[in-house]
Image 1 (cartoon, rainbow, N blue to C red):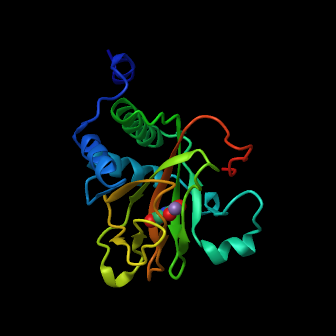
Image 2: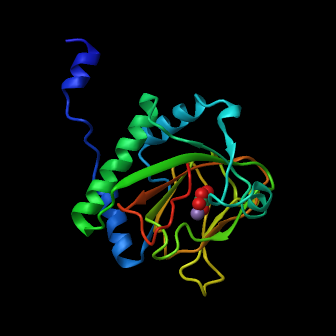
Image 3: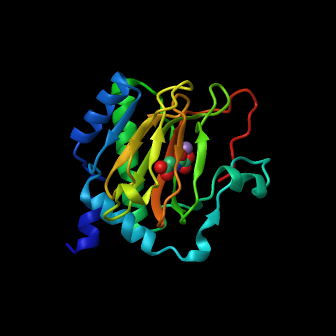
Length: 223
Ligand code: OGA
Ligand code: MN
């Protein structure tokens, strides 16, 4: 049996659930999870290889919703993004790992996560994403956010931290450096956060789990 036909006979993927268990514990206790350098190496590797297949032209200036003009958007966020479609094996591996996490969370927390979408993001030097929430309560079906980082040897003096605020009154925040292999998971409606400007290109993957159904006739932001 050659490699391809062998692969097609194997179960989809079996992932180590220890990390998932750790994330779920954190979500129960705090509503967010910071995983320092804990993204499995083969997933980091897949993301880097997937990213390498994307040309500069495929990155698009990110918006902040259907109705917003880009001039306004750039005052809020300055990143360029490229959606991960699963058109490459590496992209598929990332999406299936995220799906395995989704299933684990649904099994243990009954969150009813229904779908997942994610994109690469690049912040050039000086770019930022002002304090925001990924979803407003009752206005969106984005319920869980995930951000993973892809920057080798990031040092604090280069800036680019993610600041995660534990509620709308928190101005201090928890600081996360965008170091390769670090990732965070948090409830989308609960945690305001921002990306501080950096002195070098800052690469990440951001993703969101959604629950099913449109709520209050709101239209989802376009991809
Ligand atoms: C986002 C976001 C955080 C980061 O894309 O919505 O908040 O650290 N990203 O890149
Ligand atoms: Mn965000």
